[in-house]
Amino acid sequence: MTQVHFHCSNGQRVLVSSCDTEVADLDEAREQAAMVVQSLIATPGAEDWRGWVLHVRDDLGDEVFALPFKALIRYLH
Image (cartoon, rainbow, N blue to C red; front, side):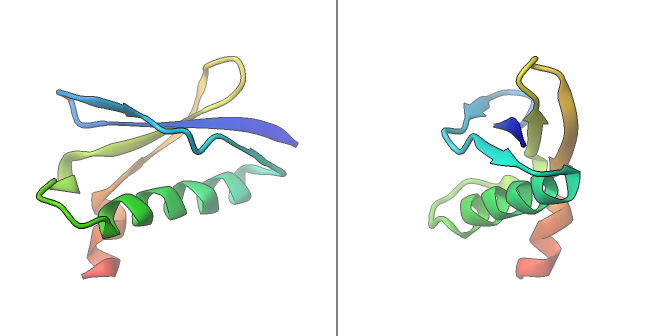
């Protein structure tokens, strides 16, 4: 199991998520990341999420991968 940490950025702002989680592998980390992005996109509000990216980091602070929100927005609308 590996602990991963999530934060989102859009070039102007950074949102640090409290949704850190333990995952068994990279596939599970991607599934968890997609759920975080979908949760934020589904939240009512005026935020335009198309320019946002979810960054996934390991315990050492190294980025494991990044997931652009726009990759999932097309599937939700």
